[in-house]
Length: 171
Length: 341
Length: 123
Image (tube, rainbow over all chains, first blue to last red):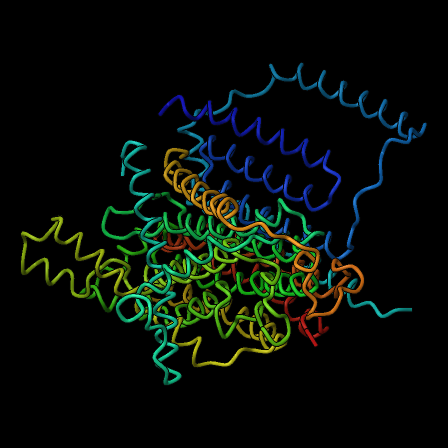
């Protein structure tokens, strides 16, 4: 069983990449959303191979089960037709592409250099210990109590904001 | 259970077949019970007492034409019923049927169950969207809005159980209810409000009456499965029955002692030979099936007794009553735990 | 642990196999006699008017939005529910409880605001 985790890691990683590409390349917004859901499942699988059970399940519960529902709702709400063809070449796109690639290569260079400086990853057993729900709870409600309340206020802002925008009277 | 994968696969196969057969039994039970409630005999032609009716229905469904509307998205149109069936069946893997008899026993199994529930929203939404019919789209939307609204209260009802047993593992939650002669420590006695909340939300999540708004015939024809025919429709039907049977199992597991025999500790003290024996295991399986069967009957009973909610009533109930109640209940359970400590 | 989830994946695979077989079997066995009337969308016997994928009320979006917020809240509470008895044993139960109360009250304000503003009215 020891070898399955690394193999599964690569399986999940490849499917996640393929799903991400599928999301970018499909023209129908709903199939894009479906690809993204598959991608989120694979990321949950990646967490599993790293022994972070709780995070993996939460990934599915919150991202696939809640946030993507909102995405699908919005796609239906706006009744998006198929996306227009991107074949027409525009000079702005070319500049954006060049700059984006430049930034990407710079970031790759920096992160490749920084790999040596990274701390050694903890072993899978240690990760399972740290990632358990119990330890998470202990840290979250004592040391990180203040950030938790701040998250609460952030969520409050989101709730109020949604209603304020949706309920705005037409001027 | 550390079993070789082929044994796990075999047990999983057995459980899926068990769910399939129980779904057909439930279809028969529903038609028979509704028949008696409405003072008519129900199915009585195929086989003894009409018992083979659901099997005849399956055969009929297989031989029906599969109609995909011209403007529908054929892939998503097939994907939606598959998702519904797969999720309903996968939830069966998480239920402990006896001490040590559970296919997937992970530390966070109850959260996995909630995650599966949250994914099943897609089956409904995508079925509504892919059909390219106004009734389907409206039915799918209503249904998914209903499911996400009640998911919160369901999560909070589960939270109150987790508070009591300090674990997200369903086996631990069952074993936690073993005290008090295996009856009085059931979570239904320790957390009655949570139990009621969970049962109500389970009705809403499985789209069963009085929450069967998605298929309100008078307004929406067939709801999200208006444009489905033949086996694809049959799969939605199958998923509905498997879903409410699995929901009955989860209600039993969380609140009614799961596989624990009533007075199990007394019985085992009386007959020490019984402890850890296969007979006890068989009795536990029988117990959990009987308990779940009772709740499956309650699902049918309620369907033929209560009228359907209006959509506004449904949303008001979910957001203005159940959600605050569930929040307060979880906090009250925590305060009582702190006081009892 | 990944190995704990293997049985779930096996069950998922078998369930996928089953539903796929059902679909394919029905598609193979069933008759294929399509005609135009049969393949148009159902609209109570009328010819369908306009697009089916019409725009609809913003309230569904609002419900989904508020759902996300409270879903995240409930997710934050699970670690608390699991560890609460340990906190009680360690004697910090009341402190943790007050943290949770504050967190829940902050979000309850949001729910109250939405109800008062009529964000959850479905009339």
